[in-house]
Image 1 (cartoon, rainbow, N blue to C red):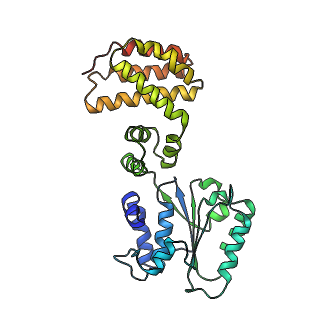
Image 2 (spheres, one colour):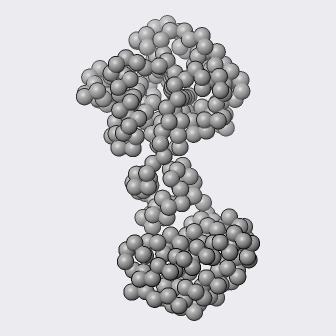
Length: 308
């Protein structure tokens, strides 16, 4: 999704703030964009870079068609550089190279931009080198550091940046983002109930245990919904072997609760007492009752419920 559309859709308030800063010439020399992955930090970095160099801005937005915008998109603009981790970290050599390139002559314009993705992954040496660069800048530049772990950024670097917080996506927006990357419909519906973090949602969606557990809970749910006695046997045969850890046991009950909530919302469930039974089961599990006992008792309670 193009940056202007993305930011206007997912970070409207912050986007207005950024546009106003540029329109009034109040850009700081360094920014720290903080927020979950997928909330628009990199889109904002690219938008600012394009807006500063765009030859034909339209309604305060970069045109995305001029040579300057295209070169930024292609990563070939001589005054815009993006630094990202080389392996697990951003190394001091990368920051030193950035500094060296910025001090060379022959730039097309005096203004320069650099973007550091996953800035929290800078090595100690890299962070200290960047700090010196921010303290003793050479020339005119706008620095944009992106992070989803603000606490891992040196306080001295934070103090030299204007920190902008990118809000977590609303459930509706998160659902849209998950659909954009082709997460299956049912999985996306479950994920937005489990987390409001795009990064965490994507991480969960690719977890082998989660996907296997999701399928198993859905089968259990169908057995319970159809009042099949096999729902009781399913606990020991399928669920108990799958959930050895407490966190996994909690997640299974949470998934079942979400399925029942969807049924209630869609009008397929006529008795909301089923949700009360699941909540009671979660309380028992928290009180250290064995998962097998909790799940079997829950199955017996739910087998007495009536559905349309």
